[in-house]
Length: 149
Image 1 (cartoon, rainbow, N blue to C red):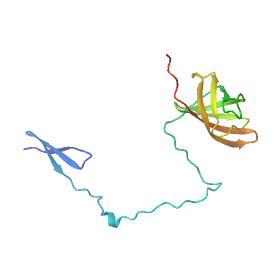
Image 2 (cartoon, rainbow, N blue to C red):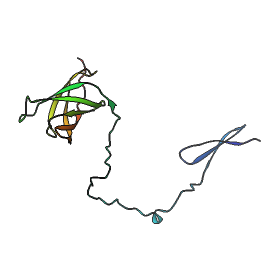
Image 3 (cartoon, helix red, strand yellow):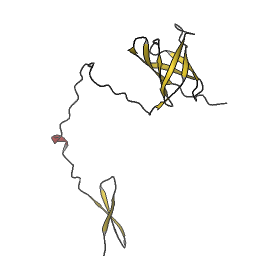
């Protein structure tokens, strides 16, 4: 009777095979510790420092984008104002760009593209960070693309 381990499933049950079939048996969890022995702590919040790294959390990866775009502001207080943008990166639901002028956070815009494989998209400004003299890094959250009717 030859039995050898075949695989282990995610529910901590071993699977052994022999010529008559497979047998399942419970396996010991070697990392088990009672909850009373585990110390749960909350990370301390500290004020951001100029030398600390800041990481962004995105739902999807972005891809490098070449080309330019125009942002047309739709909000009543800025309606019709346009801004020239240089594209930096893109995803299905977001766009990164550079501009020589700041855009108001939360502003609704229509983005028109040239030299880029996208149709005009509507979105809103979610990031506006000054990165140099007369240079701003912008982030746009794009609305879902309209399907052709």
